[in-house]
Amino acid sequence: MERPVCAAFVGMTLDGFIARPDGRLDFLDPFAAEPHGYEGFFAGVDTVLVGRATWEFVAGLADWPYPGKRVAVLTHRPLPARRGEIVLAGPPAEALDRLGREGAHRVYADGGSVVSQFLAAGLLDELTVSVVPVVLGQGIRLFQPPLSEQRLRFGGSEVYRSGLVQLRYRPRETPKVQAPDSHGH
Image (cartoon, rainbow, N blue to C red; front, side, top):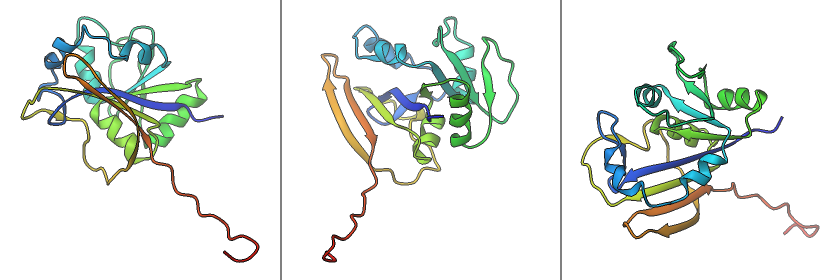
């Protein structure tokens, strides 16, 4: 079994927040009409993996943000699945392995906690951050502790008319130690 690809695609304020303290995302509304690749990204995933706080927020929305996708919630507490969500507990590697065994090929990691956990575990294969020209001053951060230093490889950027700047990253490859040649060099 091959491990599913795990990717994140998030909107973030200039000061690092993905939501207001109460979870609202209304500051992103002015940028929603401008196509910036989310639709194509979302069409390319088969499973969405969210943390409990993200699930609680989206479960209360009038419109389900993950139509047609299998949704898994990473939590240690039971939850009332409203749209067929499954509950996963344990370390990120175990959750991703289970999703792979159950047929997932491309997983969308959504929410600051899940993105941070998968980044820390070395399991986030792609990270797209759309930085919006808004400063909130407080809210829910994208990168959450405990998270050690992470070095990423730049994959590209795009600047949009609205002032949104999209940054794409991949994990940095571990440098390979070259074997000495036959002359001991």
